[in-house]
Length: 442
Image 1 (spheres, rainbow, N blue to C red):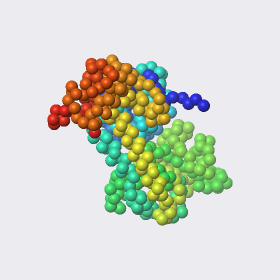
Image 2 (cartoon, rainbow, N blue to C red):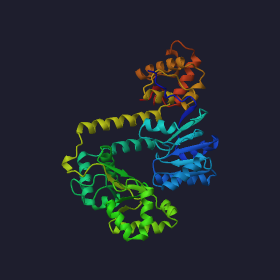
Image 3 (cartoon, rainbow, N blue to C red):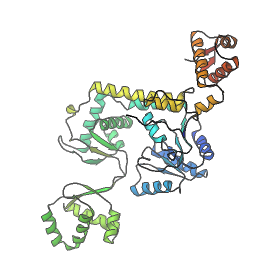
Image 4 (tube, rainbow, N blue to C red):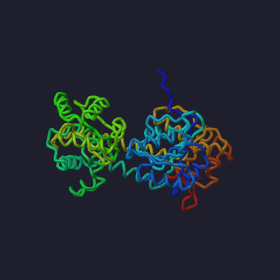
């Protein structure tokens, strides 16, 4: 069975080592016209970078999961319709969005995996016209990524300690809380239990990966309601409280299953249907909640903890040491692949990505930053690889003078050998040691 290749021939992958990322971002956007998506890791940075671009005459806006649905939809619509040129976002942006004419996708932070990078970078050039996926990297980024991955695997005892403290914090008895959500202030929790915020966060994310709970990181959560009395009792209430009759009928017409499950509601939409104000709708829902006709959970922008299982005795939390070890090893391998992709200067970026996804026998793309530098040498791939391999083998055995090295390379003209040698020096694969001899960098 034929499998479609991951290759994107119109997409040029570029890695730029740059300490002044904002300055380089501006240069990239000014040199490549058309719409762009810029990815960063924090919500705070989305706003700051969008503001920086706007101040430098680039039409830009920010996007993250903490915005209301209305705000997200408006920002997304303006970008899709080209009213906004650049959207600066966390990885919350892009899923299911059909915009084929994106010319650049720029990452200002290293992703956790090449899977994530390939998916986000691949949002450029879906119209099959020329497009660019640019990764801006500085030296500290790789160390930050390593620290981020390692810290995402806290000790098992610490994970269980946080789970128990969470139950105490919310006063949840064993066997309850399945599918229930609780507003969660991580700073208050950490202070109360004398824990570091980052350590608590990493423990919660691990529990989330294991399927015990979900941590929503200050996402906008719509209001929800559920009717708490029977259909007969509700009808009797409507008869006795006629001023609520139309209100309740509108609820029942607008949302299904209210007697069985919680349903997300939009107070503003209800207000339009009732020809009233949102405040009056909220007051009506709150009154029905207070007299136990409905359970009304108001919308919130606070982080929330949702239990995906009933609250367990901490001794029943099953985290296999072997599974823990394997997960950590996989995460580290993914991290190492990202570091290799972002640091290599002699391997085609597209070939690295394709090999990662299992496509081994591929050709150089010819359009990534590595290939463009190689193209300047006017050597074939076979010639370049031949000379590069010989130089590496020779210098790994012993340091040599330039003359000794050039004379030792066999089967190719001297001028081509010097071109490859210069390329390897420029790309920091070969260096000059204290004795003024050439040696291969370890």
